[in-house]
Image (tube, rainbow, N blue to C red; front, side, top):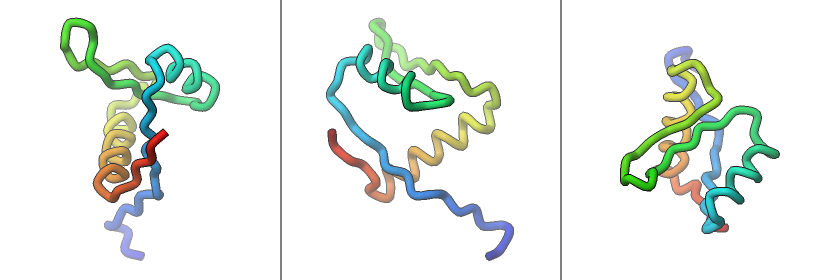
Length: 76
């Protein structure tokens, strides 16, 4: 393997129709770190996270984008 190639693990993006409080409750039990992005009640896109390193936030966002682009999306 060439050290200039970054291998992304296979990610499955799970979609749910559960309300936000339910999703947050499940996430608090399952995840060690989390990034939540969404639209607030004023229509602005915002993010809240427990991840302090911006590079790591970008890595998670790119991993999610990669998963979506490769069809790794599961319905509820």
